[in-house]
Structure formats: structure tokens, C-alpha cells
Length: 369
Length: 114
Image (cartoon, rainbow over all chains, first blue to last red; front, side, top):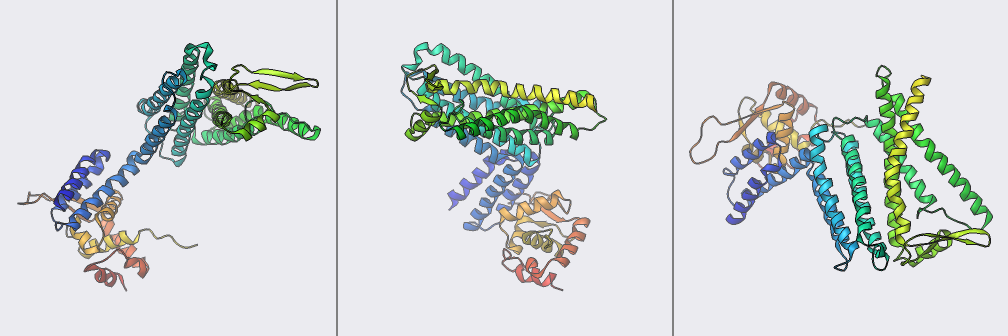
């Protein structure tokens, strides 16, 4: 019993650093009282209560739960992405990718904290930061699954240099996403919380819509005239919504800005709203579609569906090839890499496109007002 | 719509205990022993009460022989007023909470019963 008590006491003392400075005095008070508690189970229970106090206070004030969740998610992603035959360049790229992303996501909050302060106290900030990090890790995971097939022999005939170039671009884009998530959820965020919330909600809905309309990045084809017409109408509506959504979100953000503030500030909020709409849409559609592409080599039902609505999937061909039949466009023969590569462009251009439309809308709204 | 009580049953038990001898400084184990609360429940309650300015805390002035200095607690004047009001308004069930065991359980219930 004594050794167990001593061990719990040592654990309690060792975990005191988890607490903020103003809470450590309470932990010292609990240690001091332990001498008064009768030795045995009662003293052990007293000290165990101290451990409970440490975890509770650390979770409340230091975001311990968030850090543990991130560590678990990063470890899970690394474990899943790590597997593969030795010597395969895709496996090496995946491993480097996972390590780099984990370091970036763990280290950037420290850098952003110095400039923009700690995370804002609102539940929205926590939700956005957690959701954003989860989406980035999910993207890394499904991308690793895609590249395990796309860059495996004989598809890697272009050599590892091309894979590394793509990897560097992907990492730069992910740094941009992480910085945006961290800055806009910090206490001194340049974006108003309402602006971010409305942009993210609209962008996520747009991302889901884009995924439904083209889950593999290519337009769907239907054999019957009615389904084809319906799909064409839905596509037209989707494109219209894609163009209008950042503008409408920016106008909604402009209405929330105090009219006494300078025009630049209003345009900035509008651009932020558009930026978040484009960012959320790109991230959601990239994660969902890349996950679907990752399943193609393993799911025969999905491949059958793809062959009748998109095109034929092959594990060998790297470039996509349009196929034209007697009645025009028929579909594609495409490898996994061809299906997936487009999403890097979406991730890169989505936020820029949204921000540009948002800023434009803010400028026009300012002139009209 | 039901009125949400301001304090939990455990907090009311601590307030009742401190209210009994408002001028006296109490130590954590003494409060835990008399209310039947475990340390993992008692200290968060004390922390929240101190954060709200209802409880003041200090360390023992002199170093006692054979044991470390203890952290002592008592109600502030605002804490005393709040505790008195809260205990008077609390329904009987909340005033004699189930976690309260030991010698003080009867005392807590008796003190707050009109």
C-alpha cells in the first residue's frame, strides 16, 4: 500500500506542470493535507482525487483534451499511412508527408500564439480548430491511400522527383490552410467570428454539393434522357451556387460590419467571408472525393458504378484519356492519380477564388451604399 | 420552466460547512471529512468559490512541527451573504446532498432546515 501511495504522490507531483501557475497552489494544498489523512486506502483515495483535479483543471485551462485528441489522431494517421513495401518511393513520400504534417500542425499553434494570441474562448473557435485539424489529417490519410496505388510500380515511371515536387506543393498548401485555421480562431483574429461561421457553414454545404454532383471530380453521365437532363440542370444550378455563394456570404458579412469603420475594413471582412467559403468547400470536397478515389481499387461495386457513370478505372494508366463513342463523349479511362490530382488544384484555387469574389462583392456593396 | 439552482448539492454542502463557523479558518481535509466529499470533488468546488470571491484562502502562518503548512479557507463577507441566501432558498433535497456522508450529514440537513 505504501509503495502505491508513494507512486501516486510522485505522479501527482510530476503532473503539476500541466496546471496553470495560479492553480498549482491548490495542488500544493492537497499534498499538504495528505499528511492528515489516515494512511492506507483513505490517503490513496485522497491523492487519487488530486490526480482527478489535475486532469480536470488541465483540461479546462490548457486544452488537454484537445492536445490528447490531436496526438491520438496524428498517431493513428501515421500508423495507417506508414504501411507499405520498403523501397517503394510512394511509401517514403507518405511517411515524410505524415511526419511533416504532424510537425506543422503541432508547431504552428506556438508560432501563431505569439502573433495572434491563444485560441479564442468561444466554442466556435474550438469547433473550427478541431474540425479544421481533423479535416487536414483526414486528407493526409486518404491521400496516402491514393498514392500507395497511384505511385506504385508501374505508375511511378516518371520517377520520384515528380512525386516529391507534388509533395512539396501539397505541404505548402496545407501550411496555408493550417495558418488560416489557427489565425482565424485566435483571440486577436482579423476575422469576426460571425463572418467565419457563416463562411464555413456555406462552404461546407457547397463542398458536399460539389461532391454529390461529381464524387470523382469528373461530371457524371446518364444513359436515359430524363436523368441526364435533370443532372445537367443540377450541374447548372450547382455552378451558379458556387459563383453566388461567396458573394452572398460576403454581402452578409458586410452587413455585420459597423458602417463607421473604413471601407478597407469592410472589404477585408467580405474577403474573409469569401476566403472561408472557398476554403471550407475545397477542404470538404477534397477529403470526400479523395476518400472515394482511395476506395476505387478495393471496392468492385464502386468501380462498377464509376464505369457506368464516370469512366473506367485502371490501376496502370497514369494519365486520363477521354473516350468518344459513336454518340460523342463516352467517359474516361483513368488511373487513381488522374482522378486525385485535380484536388490539389481545387485546394489551391478554392480559397483564392472565394476571397477574390468576396472582396469584389464588398467593394461593390460599398459603392452602392 | 424550472429554475436552475445556482449551486450544486456538493457546493451547498461546502457552503453550509463554512457557514457554520464563518470566522474560523478551515483546512481542506477537515471540510472533506465533515461533508463526506472526496478531494477530487471538494477542491474544484473550493477553486470555483475562490474564483468568484466567495471564499478566501491563505497558508498557515507558522511552520508546524512534523507536517507541512496547511492551506486554510473561510467565507468572505460576500460569500457569507451568498451562502446564507443560497442555503435558505435551496430545496431540502439539495441541502442534504447524497455525497454528504459521515458525522456532518445530519448537521448540514438540520442547519438548513427552517
